[in-house]
Image 1 (spheres, rainbow, N blue to C red):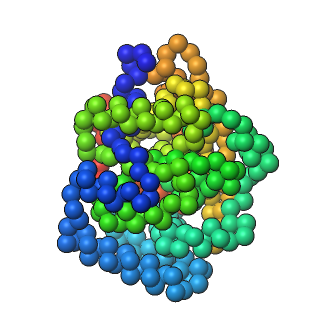
Image 2: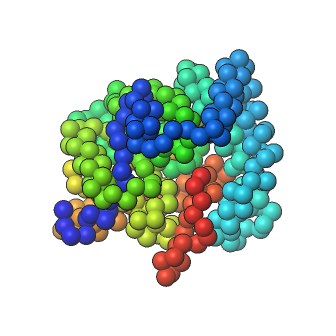
Length: 342
């Protein structure tokens, strides 16, 4: 790689390839045991899971939406969501932005509820409609590596499902939860979606060597013809400034860098909710991977193209995007607002 590329690769922060059954062990060995508060939080999660298993899917989803719709506006994240909406939609009135935020909270509640009964969501006939399915099934049936990126929209947990339905075994890259018990539970819930395993992306380890090892793992997987999935709209304090929603945000260029490095196909997709039901429309776009003499510049250009698609989708259906999880930067490079973990 050229002299500029390590920065782009390093943003894939220290991670460990884990299977669903190994997640808890790796978290315990890499960090700490759960605190009493986290154990109580996990008991609440398991109780919610047990109750959800007793109720019809529609009732579970609607109760989740109602609870989030009522409580979301009172959470501290709502203030950040409204600040971000004001940046993205200065032409809208405050009432319009609050309505978008309120609808977003309802969608977040539906997603949480659906995560509790993910197997039942996926068991529905025609749960996910894939736009131009025949085209993409043929394309993904071709040999070779594939890098896929989605955003926190609709139900992003399901955005990887088309690859499963096309016979591939995708590997996922995700940000572990703070609570190791809840994190282990979530990895197990995602098992059917990521038969190739999960990469737990750390955020607090500044060991550059560990970051390089993770990057090499991802590159090795891609070189072997694997499929790797990212939720790519997280703010990254070490990322590159990328044009987004009329401002600049710091985002990792790692997915683009890996695609550029190994010659992988690069696609973006969103799993958009249809109405209020647990039914979704999956839209996929393949982006051309630039190949000039400057790998880092190519990765930035591809990441910029990806976020242009993300912006188009967000402006079309703003109520289905997670507004509190975005960060922009000022012209001097400083972050707008504090960086909260969400």
